[in-house]
Structures are given as C-alpha cells and as structure tokens.
Image (cartoon, rainbow, N blue to C red; front, side, top):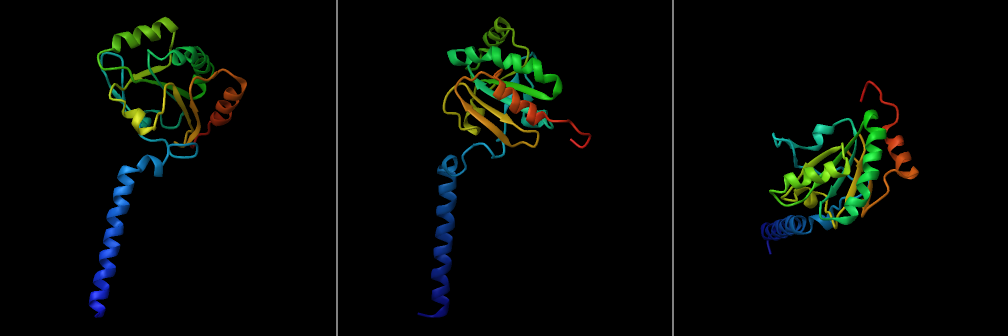
Amino acid sequence: MTARQQWTIVLGIVALLAVLLAAATHYLGDELFPVSVGSTAPPLSATTLDGTKRAKSLDDYKGKVVLLNVWATWCEPCKVEMPSIEKLHREFGPQGLAVVAVSVDDAGTEAHIREFAKELGLTFEILHDPTRTTSTNYQITGYPETFVIGREGTIRKKVIGAADWSSEANRALIRELLGPVTASR
C-alpha cells in the first residue's frame, strides 16, 4: 500500500468521525449539553400579552437577575406557587430582579392567561409561548419549572415543580445574586 493510499484511508476515517460527531450532536444534543446550574441560559422566545404582542428575549433583561418560570394555567402546582413568586417580585423587583413567567398555554388563550393573572393579582411580567420553544430550549420536563439566572446569564438555580419562592433560602439566594449594584454593571 502506498503512502497516498494510507493517507486516503486516514482522511476517510476522519471524515466519517466528523459526520458521526455532527449526527450525535444533532440527535443527542440535550443529553450532551444539558441545561443545568452553571450553564449559560439558553435563548428565551416569548411574546407579551398586551395588544402589541412584542417578542421578548433574555437580552431584554440584560444586567438583571432573572427568575424565569415556565408554567401553564391548567397546572395546579403552577397556581399554588404563583403567590410566593409575586411576593418575591414585590420585595426584590425594585432592586433588579426581573420575574418573567412564560405561559405555554395553547395559541388563542391569551385572554384566559390575562384573566388568570388578574385573579391571582400577579404584577410581574407574563409572556406567552404557545409553540413551547422555551420548553424545548430549557429542556423542561414538567410544569412548573423555574430557573434563576444571574446578571451574567448563568443559571444559578433550577427547580422542577412548585417551590415556595418567599422562603428564607430562596430570598437569601436572590439577595446574594442582586448584591450591590455597581456602575460597571
């Protein structure tokens, strides 16, 4: 076998490995790159529930600590935890906490989502993602699921299921992440 034939075989093997790696990344991406504490927050894509239906992304909350809650109106645990999220929002919103609740209810249910928020007295931002792109991007396994994202865009806490967001432990985490705001932020 000539040197040229040997190099052709080596290059063929390298090309095959590259194709296999690309396929594995495409089909196993979630398993290879899980969304977890310490990872960079994936993109957020949802729209406002006001008449303008503006698209919102994480860039809209740059420099803030974000509590991202993915939920639905038909989810009982979601309804249970909303008052504690509201309480956290009222306490820390003025200090730089952005509470963003993304509803994954079906398209055409915007009025129902607004009524749900009104009944519970929710004043934090509620967005709508009927395509459930946020669920896919954040690898949501059930509702509610909540992510606390630091100012730098890193996931600092992930909670699957309902939580008491007004608990001292959760309030301490938010206080720590908010820290003193400096001019450079």
